[in-house]
Length: 81
Image (tube, rainbow, N blue to C red; front, side, top):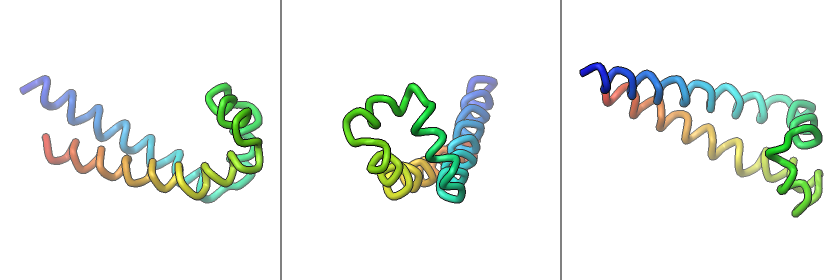
């Protein structure tokens, strides 16, 4: 029982964070640009595609995908609970 509640809360928390950052990426182009320039996670993407194309990929593909994943995580967390 306790394990189920913990897993549920983790899924809901991760889903909420995913939704927060995905909407921030979609709404604020300056935040995306700053993220691409300063993040060590985006380094390989930037190296492979360049900063402009990486920004486009984040806005057109990754942010919507993370939005859907966030909704799925929240749904699963509520479903488990």
